[in-house]
Image (cartoon, rainbow, N blue to C red):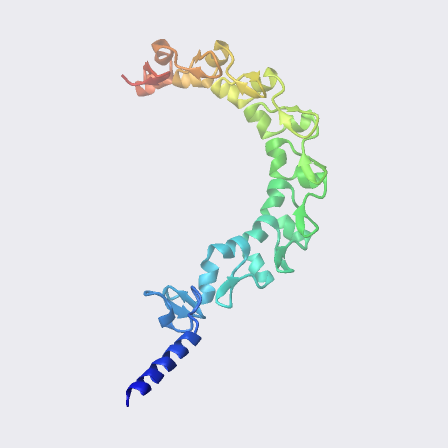
Length: 270
């Protein structure tokens, strides 16, 4: 007589269990819903590191990257302009105000404080982002000092003359001293190369296919690398090497470090 009761009880338990859907992966109601070693905090399985949800969000990489700094529904989310101001979106791009769910640039002041103003001339607001507004923005940017990009054209900073190019770091170091007539500074001739530090230091004094290379023995023998390291012989292609022991013996590397013998086109100690 007990058998029917047992079957009814089992059926009831089975029906009840099937009606309760298991928690989604990572979501929980109780600690027991989480894998071993994790606990349930605000309906999310997490490591018991002692941090509050707010501390955990602030320490996460997506807080600094995208402004997802505030706990919401068990996740870290972007919920306020304060979150934006804590992120790279603000410090790098000047996008410091939350608007329509995104960090957006809304003031010239935010743009001027951003890294991209200093680097690229993106110092004024345009359509929710920071962008160059004038030649003045371009001229105060790092791109002008590095590449000669001092003029605003079609929303971008570009080079506009040989003078722009000749004042740039790219001219001084790599011989990019000639305006290409469009927007860039290029190596226009061997004269550009001879103005560069790479010529004096490494013997890259001859223009070839838009670059400065070592083009002859004279380029190498007049370079600092010849005096210091014995790289005095042109390799017949584009660079200077130690051609023989004589190159090494006349170098500072031989006198100071005993590197007086050539091995694989370098001076080494015997």
